[in-house]
Length: 204
Image (cartoon, rainbow, N blue to C red; front, side):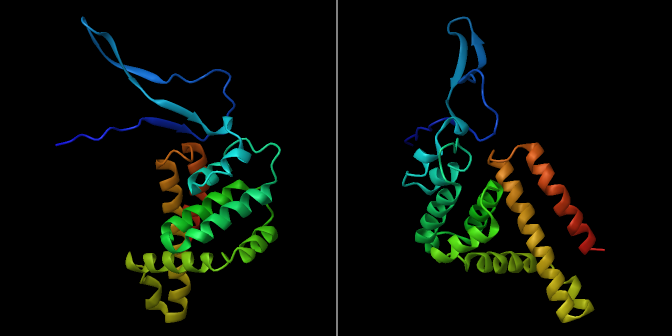
């Protein structure tokens, strides 16, 4: 069977400014013949990249990483516009989960006022995405057994079921970002704890 080569890359998206380079290898074994045996990988520090350069790339992932890079000399609104414009062009190819992650990623940027975000979405015809995402999370919540509220009345059940579904969707998205290395454990915990508290209140 033909083996496929794997490109080993470690991507750091934290906000820290490195004073010295991080090692691009670690030693995992030792033998008398070969001495130290090390595993090598490419290190990419996103904060060391320029947002203005990443946003020009064709890749949507590169455009998203522009929000974690060095954005000095750029206009935040233009970065967001470029991301939403690229997302709008690919909207039919993206899943609801992917759209949700993009929405969460942009929301973490926190450098563009909400009214401006809304205006940008309208300009690139992305204002309907949030509705699609909300419906997706709601249906996902129902599929996981969110029927408790329906016993107390259809209207109340729909409201509570949707609220629970939205919270669970946000929690799942944050866990996914943490597993991908986009959020640190501390960042994840800071955002997850209040959401879990809200979910606990709803289930009482």
